[in-house]
Length: 213
Ligand SMILES: [Zn+2]
Image (cartoon, rainbow, N blue to C red; front, side):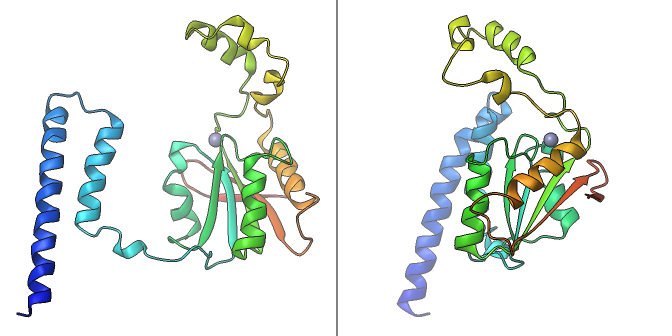
């Protein structure tokens, strides 16, 4: 065996050893039920990298399908969204927020879409809301009570630099929200007219898409 290969094998063994040492205390936490979510993520991550779990996901930053998807952060869609749309790693830019909305033309979801179009070659944009969305019927009144319970001073809820009623208000009609979001993207002053924007509602259990026209 050539000396280079031997060195590489030694390096790999050292990496595995250090990973094993890192994981050992985390396992003890887990067994005693004290390991929190982030610790579990870190333990998994070390194993994932060490076992080269990343290999099937290697790609570049340009979306192969020239597609961007604005969707909801709902946990039921964490994996379902890509699976139901048939998207692999590298196929599309996926942007998520609470409700798949563009509350302001200058918010961060809109900024991401502009970057996706001008820098990353996106030509088509899908807005994918979903049934039974938590942002539907969300209201500041509810948050206000919870915030006071969690120790936020009343003065912070009376801020004048932001309209919290508006900022934390959800939508009441999913179809209307999708239409408004599609309009906000398609008519954005910086969005080129040759970009296609279409809106959909995903059935949260089956993943079935229905287009909103
Ligand atoms: Zn949602």
